[in-house]
Image (cartoon, rainbow, N blue to C red; front, side, top):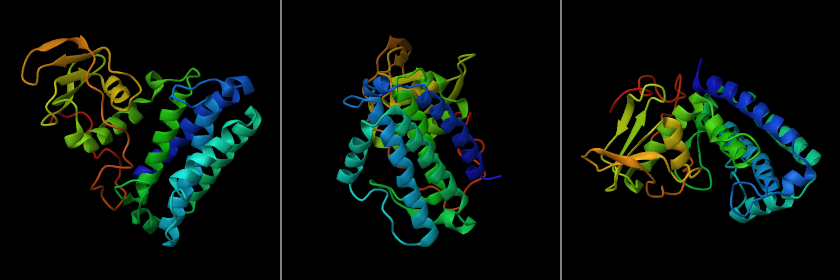
Length: 271
């Protein structure tokens, strides 16, 4: 079993949850604001649908060797979202379902060797095609929560949280607003993993879910525990704002699809 099989299963489940939420939304619900500033729920659903088609483009590039941009341009991306945002709920749901099926079909058409082909999104870095399904799962989970329709970051599956926190910390690097990040077991409070040598700010502690929600801009970090970089834990507080998220992928991914992601042995170890 490879990471692609693992992500396909998770993505199928995540898509089913998203479709179930979307099926409950009325025309009026879709005109209401989402949790993303300036976007209605209709904008969010239109974005998720067009995002699926954009990843079909990247898989076609990997499969055929013909450069196929994710989007024709940033303006075309925005225009597609605006064009779809105001549609009736039934049309939104059908588009969401159909685009997800197109992406699933594109994954099924990929020969094994094509997963190693490098592709690029609208921003660097390039990454091997096997990472495209991970990017799609991220879009489905994060924007499902952004709908503000009963599914939130507290509902993200544990496997998704662990993978996303791992990748987010890989690309945080020199842009980190904090000096240390400590992930705590939500049940016992034990340290699962510590990232050190980051920025010049305070240390921040929290569960993987709390940390990911803050680092992805879905909370302001209120309730995370702050400390001086080499001092005692201080008090619950609000850490500095994280840098813009996400990058398309971490740099330096292996070309060959790994058996799982994160690599075995990195999920719950101290570093």
